[in-house]
Length: 204
Image (cartoon, rainbow, N blue to C red):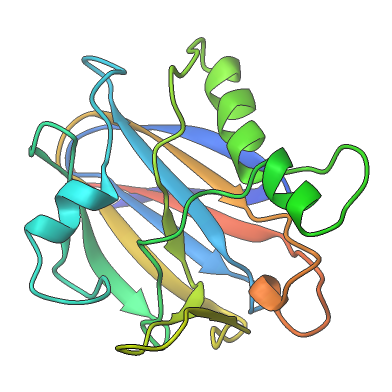
């Protein structure tokens, strides 16, 4: 029988998880509409990380879907999207929000952001990243139309929707419950929400 444990990531916060090869990380959009910034690093070397640019080269789809294998900056498989009980709308183009992004949106003063969340979560695991890779933005609804501008739309994920990411190597995964509250990234009410995370270990 598979063994699992569930962790709640508070709205606007992040947490890191150590995954062993074969385990599955299930990200549950508990209340719906919440975007989750997702990163993965090889445990053998933090300089090897899940890269959206490299992953897109290995894919024939414009967005991740069941069966999509995410690759590192060294073209090595690291995670697989093995479950998707959501409408299947995810983004792998946009950079993580950071302090400068909120300043450009007119916010004054410090603002929680996914880039700093990544640094803090890795710091708690004893690591200091040298860069902030482009994340896999689970549940983010970004519209790209040929010849037209990009548009960030409100999410279509419903309460209880979830995705599963299977570890293809031993890795560190960081999840950030995106703190965006100026754009409708996390819904029309501009309110970030908590998410639940379940780690399912393979039997045996």
